[in-house]
Image (cartoon, rainbow, N blue to C red; front, top):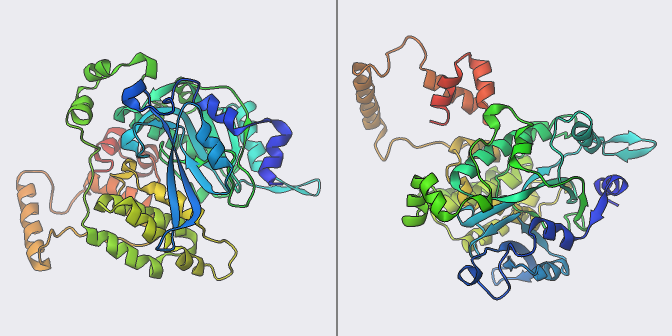
Amino acid sequence: MNLLTKYLETYFDEVTYKDFYRDIFPVGVLQCKGKDYYGDRKYNGIIVEVTDEKLNSGKPKVLRHTLTDDLEKLDEVVSRDNFCLMSPISYAGKTRDSSMARELYALAFDLDGIQTRIKDGEEWPYGLANFFHQVDHMMIMPKPTYVVSSGTGVHLYYVFERPVPMFENIVEQIEILKKELTRMMWHDSISKLVDEIQYEPVCQGFRVVGTITKTGDRVKAFETGGKVTIEYLNEFVRDEYKVKEFTYKSDLTLDQAKNKYPEWYQKRIIEKKGRGTWNFNRAVYDKWLERLPREANLGHRYWSIWVLAITAMKCGISLDELERDAFGLIDIMNNKDENKSDPFTEDDVLAALEGYDSAWYTYPIDKMSYRANIPIEKNKRNGRKQDVHIKYMNNQRAFKVEMGECTNGGRPDKQKIVQKWQLENPEGTKYQCVKDTGLSKNTVKKWWNI
């Protein structure tokens, strides 16, 4: 039996996959089978499944299922031994993209690399025991509603008492809260991967409870606490990470959102625009795809495919083409492991394809490079020859000096100090930057991600 599953079975009650998802999506919140949004004004869940069926290209066929209020689709996917993902979110239509996400029913966290030690002659997941000690006795971690044993790690689900509408400004705040809670959870007393923390977006999908794991077991869920609120989660982080402006689903109609968030309403509802993004040329995607066989390394195989997915989205590459290219890299990625000790599978590829989501539109290039451990040089010449570009930049600097916006030498520019610190500490926080550089909080905030 899986070590983590054995621990959870010892201390908590297991719940069936149907009961688990029924608690997340109560009766009546999802669309009725056979209807669409215009039929009952409700949304649906989306399950992504990698099948054993092969396309003409030899790549696996990927299915996307709509989860309706009857939850019948769960029975179908659980009956097969395929890898399946789903997020605790309702969507408009069948596209599992953050731009189509409507209501957040739970905040889920991935926790890997659980610390272990020998106890009474047997291996014991003391990292998981430490997590619950910090939850129940030290009270420095929020108590999850469910803990899911996913194979090699666990997923922590904090199910909301009332779902949260996924307005852009609210999601941005929740992303900050989730990142800080993730940092806390991946403490070295809990995870041995403290230097490789996996920060994931709110919309990240996780293995469907009841389906197969990477190790061949079944994903199991255990009830560990009650439902939560945003206010409860806020209690565990400093003020700068709290969600300060939000509302619950039943408190805000679209008309009220129009009055409260006029800019969002104009852009997303009236003009039907997505989030802002950088648009890359297709050549950027082709170049990255060409580099991966040579430059991807063993410890960053997942992240190199994840960056490929982000690049595909930014370059306007279709999901079908991306899937063909990504699944075609499996053998190449496995060749990176000379000892054949850690197989890179279709499951890993599908998980990495989560990067194909508008939630990552503005993900910085330097951080993409850091994740994949492959250098990405920015081209800032805008098509100019080097000597012409140098003249252009010198003229620009002379103009800024004349306008008093910068100096020739002398005191270091505060913007550059912040930017240099961010490059050297890609997962760092504003608080850490203030502490390390000695700059004021307002100065760091002003130049953060500029």
